[in-house]
Image 1 (spheres, rainbow, N blue to C red):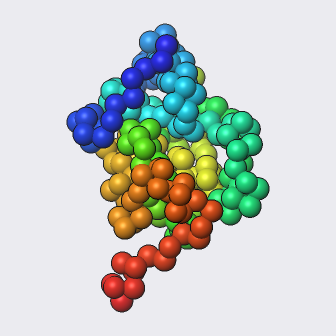
Image 2 (cartoon, helix red, strand yellow):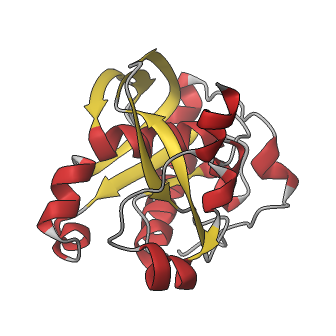
Length: 196
C-alpha cells in the first residue's frame, strides 16, 4: 500500500523518533510497514524513506539506489558523486559511530520537501551501527552517495531535515536547478570566505 508522504511543517518531521524494541522489529506490523514504505519509496520515486516521512515517529528507514536510478545519471556524475547500486535494505535504530572529516558538497532533495533542492555538505564516509528487519545487528561502512543517503535518512530519525544543513544561498526549486545548475560545478561557499 502506498502511504502518504508528509511534507515539511508537519510536527512529526521535527521530533526525534523512538527506538523500536526487538519484539517490534520482528513483528508482523513492522514487516507490513517495511513493505508499504518500500512501495511508497518506489512510487515517489526516491532512494530512501524514513518512518517519520510517513507520519510514524519510529527509528526505521528503507534505502535502495537501484540500477534503474543510475541509468538516468551521466557516467561523469556517477564518478564525481561516487554513486553506485545500493541494494534494498532496512536500517532500524541506527547510530552513526564515525563521520569522516572530509566532506562533499552536492545538491540534495527530499520527498518531504517536494520540488526543492540545495547544496548540502556531508561526510564522504561514515560507519553506521543498526539492526536489520530480522533484528540482527549490522555495521555498515559507506562512502560516496550511499553515505549521503544514510546521513539524510538518519537525520530524519532525529528531527533534522536537509534544510537545517544546507548552504542556504543554493536553495532552489527543482525546475530552476534543472535550468540553471544541473551539470554546472557546485558554487563556492561564500559564507566560508566571510568567516575567515
